[in-house]
Length: 161
Image (cartoon, rainbow, N blue to C red; front, side):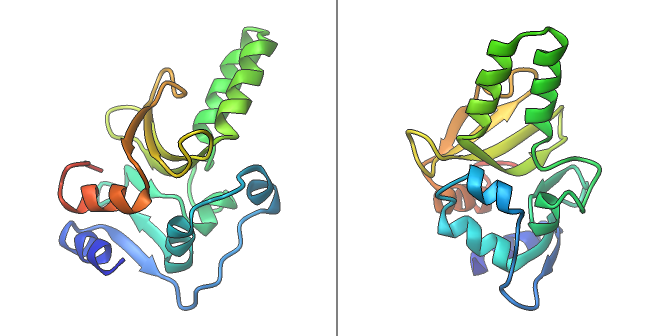
């Protein structure tokens, strides 16, 4: 975590460290997303806020999961997909979107060059980090085998946030 915090400082990210390691996110989120990796729990315990200098990329922190931190919901892209499926009266598509998002826990939102996100895969490749971008949010690309590798790739400039 020290290397990542150093990277945040060197890259002028706006972050606030928590005074204590306590956090709480809504029970319905924890019930939906079983097996959130301990590495991400450490981020939730460490950061109150973690936002890029442009304010266009941010790690979802405790207040984000409570929808108290920005104009975007923590599950904004799932909501966009569901809205499209409902507008088309496509119940099968709506079900597929819900099932997909129930297995992919979003932890970064980006507004750089359109809407995109990073999520933790909680399905078959448990712990892998995937990247998705509009318009087909559920068509993702695996970018790291776990959060630790993801953060290393970020600090080495191999993944740009």
